[in-house]
Length: 110
Image (cartoon, rainbow, N blue to C red; front, top):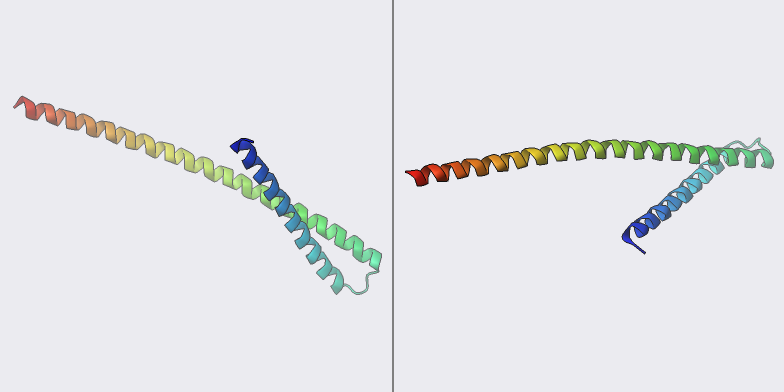
């Protein structure tokens, strides 16, 4: 198994764990809501809880998608900024080396 395969496996496991946690949170929230509505029949309560849990998970996935998109945007912005800074540093180093060489030539010519 390559390092890339291992990272992909870890990402898949994390995804499954996140989904399981969101489903459990949704189920708990749905049960709390259903318990407050004492006038519902058991069938209605089960239906409400099922729909609530599904909506909760859908909203969690939407939120995760937005977070991932924002992370990609930030990564792209930081990487472009890093490349620009690296180019400036390289230009300064080349300029410094050129000035040092010129100074050495002037001093040695005297």
